[in-house]
Image (tube, rainbow, N blue to C red; front, side, top):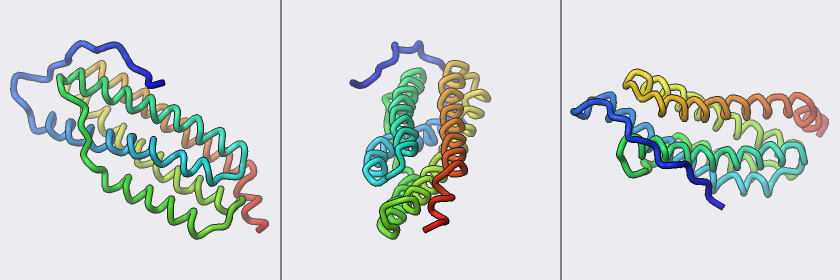
Length: 178
């Protein structure tokens, strides 16, 4: 069931469309594409993991990613814009890299370690994107957008931390023994 957020009031930047506003909207379209692509890609990763703990972390990440899409749609609506995507070449490359890791590793701890590596690269890209977007929104005086983007950023950081803890607690050590 798709989550919806109440329609936000429109936040306005100015009467004219500033260059920073256009850049903000462009980057918003980019991360929107990226998050939607991850919603499609994460189930494949889930089908390829063997660790129950990693499965749970990725399953939680999928739910959070769906929430990120909803929050981004709210930011678009705050701007009085329809949510639109612009292909994110960086995320497309990171997803291809994850597919490549899975095709070049055997099922088990080594593949699980590779999946953690791939997902952490994704998390780091998302953290950079949300940090930048949050700063742009703050500069533009979009306080409600700042809060939504910060929420996404906080969840990305938490997901990255969970993956690091999981890798250090078991998976990487099991992979090293193979």
